[in-house]
Figure (cartoon, helix red, strand yellow):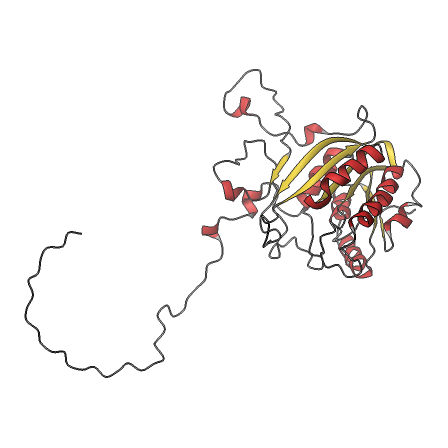
Length: 318
């Protein structure tokens, strides 16, 4: 198949035409089977049907990966355990990391705690031979910043596996010196927002995954094009890419985004989320032009008050 292309077709049929063992890194953000409204896909299947479909497209991904290939999967709570076991037990991959991507402004729920995280599974084909560019994502360690320990590695340390998206919610806990990952969620008011797809992934999050698990010139596969962010970031970071999207509308929008993207373009969104996620005090405020609007009901005519006997005034206790 032609690289640097998004195909408007079903991913299972499309991936069957990819030469086996040709993909360096695959990232999948499939429908979570929670009833989300897509234009051409029904996101509410019976559990067995959904899991069987996952096995089908998952097997196609594994077949396409190189022996040294890596696969990242984004999935919600409802089927996280089942999909992890499918890729480990049935499809033969090895789970290197189980990342929790935390965010706010998630799906509001009435009869359960509101959703505020997504699972990111990091799988590899060969646990002894895979790409992991650890120097690309190191952060300063406590040994360096707090204790001035001469034994500290000058390169810093690897981040934790919890990624926080709104550090202003815990301003005194998640500082740049700590080892927590966080990225702003792509909200409706962000410049990064493409506007045609409701589940857009942050470019900085995809950038971390692609820079860590692939090298320039490697081939990136995205079975579920969605808003196109994986392909956009792959192109910006000088990777080859290949993607599939079932919806013609979404595919047309992705093609438009890809045409306006150049190799070397900076990733959208701030690498340091505190820059792009203002505190409530610095956010938009409601402005009242007339804080005390006139009472539309005309006041009653005042009557003269009757004089009463003077009362003894005592000092106030408060």
